[in-house]
Image (tube, rainbow, N blue to C red):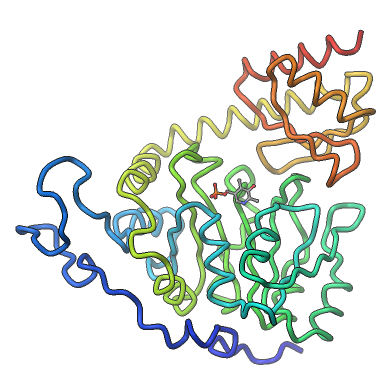
Length: 345
Ligand SMILES: *Cc1c(COP(=O)(O)O)cnc(C)c1O
């Protein structure tokens, strides 16, 4: 049975008692007036500090995702969100996090930076969670404060099942990284944030919204968790340029929808064509915008592609003889397939 959830007991004491920096734009947040409060330059276009609360962006996201604004956190990319979660909840040197490789490398790096012990519980042969091993660890190791899972998972591409079992049996923080969810919206856990006070769902503008260059990451959770992240973040963590870029993307939903449709069509095409190549041993099913492909010799294929200026991601160190191929534009994918076919000779 799940023990009662007690947020305050999970939060680092210094964060719990932290009195946040109060910026000029926090104290007076109206938009009309003569602003002589923040030592800004009165000239120029980007002369003013950005909204530290990103209100316009949160309002737009709130309407799109049907989540109250106080349950939305905006970060300088998911990378900042991941780091902040460790900083809010992880006591350096004593707490630990469970991660499930092969998965996104930033969880481990951010844990190491914050001196949080990493407990690896690898995915099984179907790239699904090893629930029994996770439950046993949670029961027997009280240092486990956090669990990071990624669904659809990078680099394997599949959606994870049974995350509910973890949420039901763990009273630490469960982070579900949904960076690729817009390619497979039906499997999102966003609808569960009201039900689970220990759940943080991460999403990003970097993939489906085509804004990797803008650095805008999102966390959804209950207001108490969002408030802790807000008071810990740097005041102006998301630049005005980045907020504007995200708002602009949200105002062109049709463009995004069409792009996603094209990417999914192209993924189907690659799923059809890649297995026809003699040295391709397996194309894993994918709910994301990339394919994990097993080769007879991944290093050789990767290197030959680089020579042809087609850059893929060699994931052999994580999954034997596999490269991860992002679904590109129709033209890029055609070139990829041509180069791969030429290597057959
Ligand atoms: C690409 C990716 C992200 C996005 O990170 P940003 O910092 O928002 O660009 C997050 N998680 C996973 C698993 C990813 O693959």
